[in-house]
Length: 147
Length: 224
Image 1 (cartoon, each protein chain N blue to C red):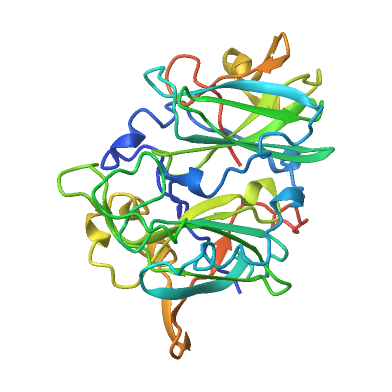
Image 2 (cartoon, chains in turn green, blue):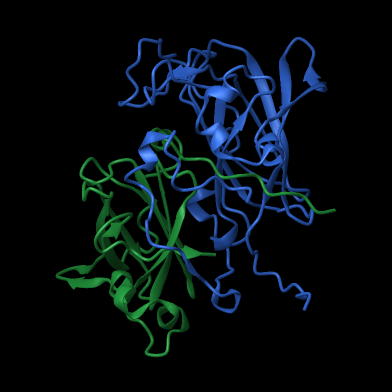
């Protein structure tokens, strides 16, 4: 029997009472640190967003709410890229993107992204890991995927 | 389209929080499939009962909320994490940003977790949440709802939604509920009252099946 899917609804502003847990951002304690902001169309930080990063080989899952300055971080295995979901108040359904740490030269997904927007998916090296800002709207808008 | 649009002016917060560029199609061949290992997320034995997290019992209408987690073919999604959060019976969340003048309940935190069984079944015991004002427009009130988070079998099945209660008079005034334009899809967000599952001298029962779309990584023969 075929059934229609349950529709998505926003996480709202109060998901922090249920979804985060203390070790949530740290999938691998000695892993690679990836951090950044979630920013809105005015360039302002979003303090009520949730970032989830998945890696598949090896399997790992990290979840981090943004803080009052819109900052998040995860500690993950050293993989070529992370698959990412972004949730927030004001997002009626979550957004899906990828954070490339060390992309393979022939990565098919990166190749399918318009060349002038590809850079929005590449994390920047920092002193202690990587930086990646998620821009939901406006100049430098992150590429989001239809999965 | 069963999902709401990202740009939905009646819900004001969408204005600066929706991408203006088109989404880029992620071909199925490169889509991921593995679900997360529960590990630390694995629920404890009392995590499904929101009425037993404090020394006393919370005020309000005790209810059970249960149902099955399914894929679009009706197959159960087993051993999968279900997380919920909600306000208390007075419509107040235990969150530092929620400051409207309704009382907090010292015996209610408003968060619960459980894992689906081999039949995809889950169940919670909780208190019926109240409606609350949210300032989106004049006299804006959210219909009573419980937030649900589902991990499913794969990255593509991830879903966060809200469960509503049957017959709520606030439905037509709520731009979050009505952001789902398809009437039948809207119905799928509304739980069903069940007298048969209600327990005498204990709790009324609401049933809510959740169907995850998205690709689950299971090879399916494509119809070409």
